[in-house]
Image (cartoon, rainbow, N blue to C red; front, side):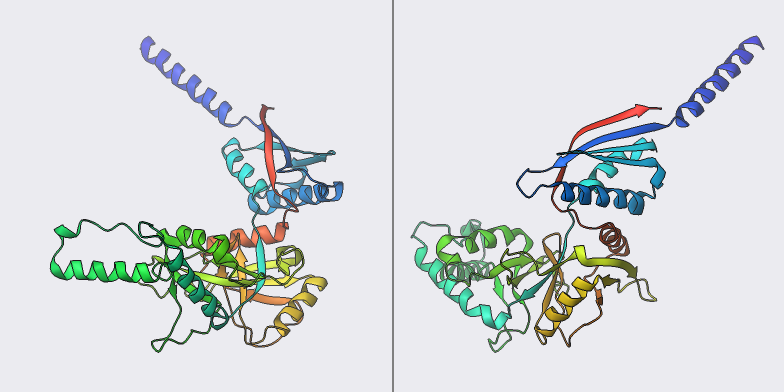
Length: 352
């Protein structure tokens, strides 16, 4: 009986210790600095970055304002969070330094770019030497294939020889060879996108295209491809002197994610500040019947064709978002966009 009482006392003590440990509170101290320093790194931008961090902590984690302290010095931001759940530290670090961007770009039509792509494909053929692997993929041992398989492989290799670019980037054409109306200029297998990038960045190839053209891939696989392996390449038109997007997420004053009755068809409703509304009206007015590319974190999420001028600064965007992705984007937009990239140099977890 005595042994049982001692054993029971040990259990009670262990549970008591565990409960007290779980109930312990911690403070989190993080030092954040700009990723790179330049003449553009000024006090007002550091203050703006601190404001964005503060908003993200509230919107993403619902941390009370009284538990957040931000001290901005000449070249750094010191963040102190009181009474923090240490299991969230990693996520907090990711969120406050995430450089998520939402951009709206003008575009070229496929019909305006197909000629340049054809010239690039032809030039790449002349650049190839007999033993070059430019545009050619290694084939398996043909001796192990049937006659039909061998003929098919030979045919593909011949096409690759004659069309180094088009063998991995399928041009967007109708069955009669006409360019499909879109800013999407080609489709490539996900595993080939890096090779397409390499080709298009070659000096001789790059010189063929307009200076104000840049390429941008879809973030998601092409929705009409059953294999879900193909990704679209889009032709973005750069129209600003600093080569930045004419409109970005910094003008967003409110955002909300909504879904249809079937919990699909996720949309994000946006409201812009007066300056953003003015730019958006101009952008849509000057691009009626053309596509505007909605680019999130460097990838195209949607590319709607403008039907008419959109005034007032209210608009909706889609892009095959999940509801969770849409909510994260909404929280990011509500928080504001960082003026520059940040990095964390110190992290301290302090028992209270």
